[in-house]
Structure formats: C-alpha cells, structure tokens
View 1 (tube, rainbow, N blue to C red):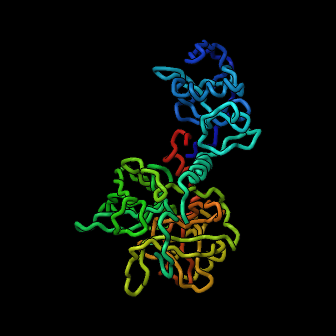
View 2: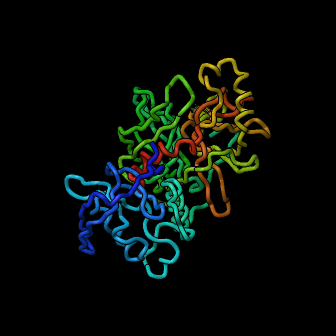
View 3: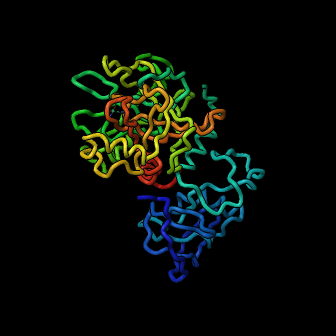
Length: 399
Ligand code: ARG
C-alpha cells in the first residue's frame, strides 16, 4: 500500500483537457496531464509538492488558496484524468500555506507553522501528529500491567478498553489506542476470533467500571481491519484497526495519540511506558479496574532475538526470529514490570517530550513468553506499519 510514496509521473501537455475552476471561471486548455491515474492515487505537483488525485469540485477550495497566494498557477495543477462527472485533478495533500500566509489569513490553521520553504509534504501520520499536538494545548491535558502505577485521569486520553461479548457477559479483553476521531489501533490477535466479536470501545475513563461524564462507549463497526499478512499461528504483523461507528467527542479525557514514525529503537534512556487494564498478578490472574502503566526499556533486537531463540517454542511462532517489524521491551531494573494477558492491543508509549506532553504510540502490545519472565515483551512496531495504518485511517491522504 502506501499512499504517500507518490509515483513519479511525467507531466506532458499533449492531451488538452479543459476543466472549470469554479472560483475563477477559467477554462484551462493546457494542463499538464498525468498518465492513467484515478481518484485517490498519489501524484506530484510542481516543486515536488505531494498531491492526491481528486475530483476538481472537491479540490477547488484548496487550489484556490494556492493560487491566491501565488504558490501555484492554474496551469500548475496537473490533470489525473476524467471521471464520468468531472475532471480529476492532482490536488495538493496539504492545505495551503506555511509561514508567510499567516498575516494574511485570520482563520486558524489546524497545523503548526510549517518550516519554510517547504518542498515536501509530511506523510499523513506526521500531519495528524502535528494537529494532535497543536489542539492538545486547547484541551489542557493533565498530567495493567504487572507492577504498574495508576494512571491519572486524562493522562493517556487515547487509551481504549475494548469490550467483547463472551457467553452473554461483557468482557474487556484487550486494550487499544485512539489514533483518529474514528479509529482504534489494536492487536490482530485480539479481534481475529470469529466467536469473540468486539462490541464497543470504552474511552475517557481510567476506572473501567465507573460511570462518569467523561466516559464514552462507542460501538465498533464490522469493518475490522486485520493486517492482511497476519496469521494466527505466528506473532508477526499482529496489528489491526477498528472503525468506530461514530466520531468520538474530543475532550481532555478522550483524545487521539500520535503514531511513532521513527523506525529505529529510541535510545536506551528513552522514557517508555506500557499501559493497560490486564492481569496484575500471574497467580491470581486478577485484572485491574484502574488503568495502570509501567516504565520499560527497549531491548535491542539482536539481544531480544537471542533471548527468544533460547525458548524451545519460539521457532514455532517466530520462525523468522525477532525481525524489525517487532519491538522488544522489558523491565531491566527489577524484572517485575511487564504487560500481561488482557493488555494486548494497548500501547507502548514513547514520551518524546514530557514537559510539553508529547508522546507517541510506538508499539502495540502483542505477546511474550509468560509475563515478566527473562524474555522481553513483544510489541508490533507501529512505525513499520504506517503505510497500512494511513491507508485505512486517511485513505485519501487528507488528515
Ligand atoms: N497476549 C497477551 C494478551 O492477549 C499480551 C501478552 C503480553 N505479554 C508480555 N509478556 N508482555 O493480552
């Protein structure tokens, strides 16, 4: 997949196609033409500006801003082709404009000022993170797990508890992370059993039972996107995206999180936490009513691989070993903290800038040999799956 790897397309002026730019009423006959592209396909505009093929009527407001600010001229908008109704044009992915536009416009942009001059447009996950972190200020966000500490209300407003129906009971069997107003990121193995259908996501609360004004239970649609390469007999590609039946109400207790885009492990002193309502004690198997979190350390893949290779069963589930789409984390200090049953699907959070409350979901809790054993916990590395996630959450490339 990968909407944001724009195909390199050659613009030619050979096919003259006319389209009406509503505001300007211009009939353009000399458009650059992109070969055989369809609505939704990535494309490139002048100056390597990333675009997406879209019906001209939808794109006009955005194009107009580029034209008004003289960033593009009408003839810089390539045509992708014709639909039955209208011209499909290469529409810039990003809203116009960066720094120098600010004095002219009083309307507030959802994105922070872009570095200028901008030659490239960040991928949707990066754009979404900017929007999340900008709006986060408006909400003034406040300040599970084995050996965890209770999470303050509003501290991890992206946390979702996923409710399943099991023998007429509602069971909160997995965690998840809100990553847009309508999508929850979780583990594929949580939602892969046809007899265990996820019903709703509980958001906005740290106490899973408390009825509060902040709590939002939102139904999960049947549109359950399990990673296409996930197979239940192995631990790879353990990632899925659930679609919510309606948009969440954004509050300081319910708010999406950024997706981590850095592919490499963070430094060993990075501040990372695992969070969930899962088992707290492997003997009693009691789960937590309160959201817990525990600090962990990322274990380098080579070291993690050795640790798993020593496990007799690991070949069966991890035939390729610990590859870089996985991420390992453990409590290297006391060896008592870890995710455990019931935490799966929840996040491994990287706190990038604690003071400014900037954090990203770096991993999805996936598996482990036991809990808090000598093998690290295994996580699905979110940055390895951005194309997959973006293709579902922002299918047109627009955030
Ligand atoms: N598979 C477990 C679940 O479904 C999560 C296991 C995580 N284990 C670990 N040792 N980190 O909830």
